[in-house]
Amino acid sequence: MDLKSSTVLITGGSSGIGLEIAKQLLEKGAKVIVTGRDRAKLDEAKAKHPKLEVIQSDVADSKQVETLKQAITSKYPETNIVINNAGIMRKINMHENRALEDVTREIEINLMGPVRMTQAFLPHLKTKPEAAIVNVSSGLAFVPFAISPVYSATKAGLHSFTQALRIQLKGTNVRAIELAPPGTDTPLFTGDEFTKEDTAGPKPMPVDELARAFVRGLERDVEEIRPGVSNGLKWLSRIAPDFAVNMLGKSAQNMRH
Image (cartoon, rainbow, N blue to C red; front, side, top):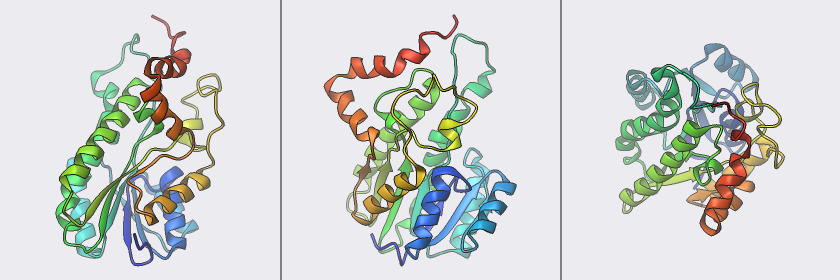
């Protein structure tokens, strides 16, 4: 894909993986618009990277997705790549009481968000000579992380959705691409939500290294981009699925009943 002539919309692009991808796409000559829920983070990203365009929007709100579509197609009609990156990851013990509307929060953002965005933007993308929908899943799409059961389920669902979408888009000018990051050195994975014991294992991939792998894969038309440990998890899930699940499930064994 020719990135220099592309205009890219990235959800959840005010920090972490999304912002690093935005930065590297700008360096390739692409025009980049990022969205996020936090106005302060968007303003900070814009201050650091003046060429960025920023829009406050929440993919968990279908009305905001519709408003975003109207804004993008009106102000940035040349947009030809949508990267569904917005996501949250939480440690959830299903033995503990939790409000029902809270326990499904990751589903609203991580899975329903990309589905909404795809439905909203696909008609527009189909009018472009070359276009793509990129869904950011996780290595945990292949092997669940037991202390983050809902997050793992959303990423497995997003992986399946992307595979099905890819088949539906055959014969069109729109490609369905999946980026499955491994544990990455961002607040999502290394923040206060998790302890060092929770995330013990392979060293998190530097976010700039992850973004480079993604941009390289996007340029080369790779449909499923699995940097670092994610590639191993994909194959381990096929060769020894029970071992893989138990390997990532050790930290959940101490959760209180």
